[in-house]
Amino acid sequence: MTTLTIKEKEYQGKCNFKFDRLADEKYNEEDAKGNKSGGFMNIYMNLLQRSHPKYLVAFWDCALAHLGKTKPSTELIESAIEELLENEETSEQVYKDAFNMVDESGFFKIQAKNFWKNLEILKDSGNDDKDKAENLKMYNLMHEARTALKE
Image 1 (tube, one colour):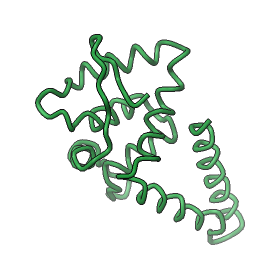
Image 2 (cartoon, one colour):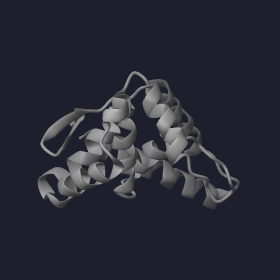
Image 3 (cartoon, one colour):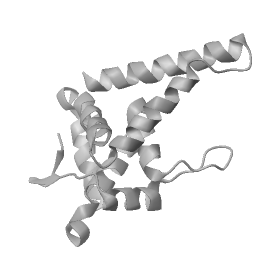
């Protein structure tokens, strides 16, 4: 689903500069140490982890940014997502489609590829055996989450 139906109208999502700009403006959150990873990466990671439906709304808010003044409001996007999530047949697919759109887009392909390449370092790093085991566990969880979203 690279489209979202809102009030019986189908909207096509796009990953482009407007997506990236809006993601940085609205969704570039700080971590506990005050670091910002960028709006795109925040959305990407939260879709990967399926952490909260608000990141589906963030994704579609950004994916529809190319519509400019005709872009549906965040409240309308929320209502459409809520309806999809209430339906067992579409709830899992909504996450898969959003994640795969950014993961496979030409626009974000290099960032996504670099993320997974850099994640490879995690599987062998750590100060001691406990750290290494935790990092390997995190590495495996991330890959399992991605595999589940690719099915």
